[in-house]
Each structure stands twice: as C-alpha cells, then as structure tokens.
Image 1 (tube, helix red, strand yellow):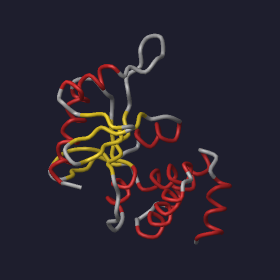
Image 2 (cartoon, helix red, strand yellow):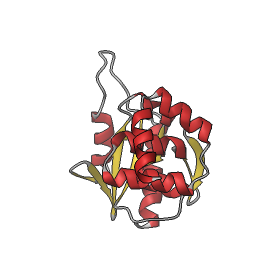
Image 3 (tube, one colour):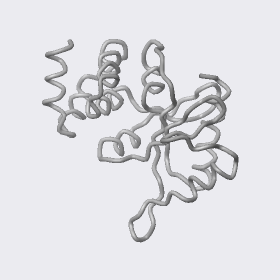
Length: 173
C-alpha cells in the first residue's frame, strides 16, 4: 500500500469527522493489527466509524457517500478506492465494535493524528468474526503484541466470547 494513499484516507476521515459527517473513527483490521505487531501482507485499510443516526433511528449514509463521490472517489464493492488503496469503511455494528471504537487510542500515523483500536479489541473482533484470516490475526496479536491479559479477559467475558476463546487457545496456542 502506498503511504501517500493511507495519509490521504486518514485526512479524509479526519475532515469528515470535523464536518460532522461521521463520528469518531479508528484504524482496525489488519493495518490496526500491524500497528501492534510485525508487518504482514494485507489488501486494504479498515476504518471503523460511527455514522450519524436520523431522528427515526436510521443510519445516514447519503452525507458520507456524497462527500466521497463529490471528491471523485469510486465505490468498488464494499470498498472506496483512494489512489491505489482500497478502504473498507465499517460502521460500528455491534456492542463489541462500539466499545472498541470508544476505547481506541489516539496515535500519529505518518504524521497524521488518528485513532487505532487497542490490540485486545482487535483480537476480540477477529475472534468473533472467525474467518481463517481473522484467526491468523488472533494468533499474531496474541503472540506479538503487548496485550493486557486482564483487560482482554474482561472483553472476552463481557462479549460472550469465552467458548470461542477457549476453543482457539486449545487448538492453536
């Protein structure tokens, strides 16, 4: 991935947040994991974000997509293409991802202020998702990041992931 495209994507979400088009945002997925571990290959940048809700309770997507389309960015499946970078904008979708976003950490990436999900939440989200690529991420985060084990256990318990976590540990650790 090109550094300039990552910087551009981060500037875009910062601008959307400043304008109230989205709420808080944070880097998640593989790039989020790479922040805490050794680098590995990935095809996209996952940005978790809070989308505004209408008075009727529906998510307001038009301002979000309107902002991007007006600036010439293309939608390709679930991604928005920013330069050579495919960006997956993921609205928080359950209590775990909402909590993860609320607890994200402020960081600077290539000189741009942003947030990244804590490694404990990245691990829990990957465990909850459960695809093979996510389970690899769980293993990598567990082995390479500086996890707060008590904090991780509280997340695992609070979000009903104990059975998945115990099964994962038995099989892979």
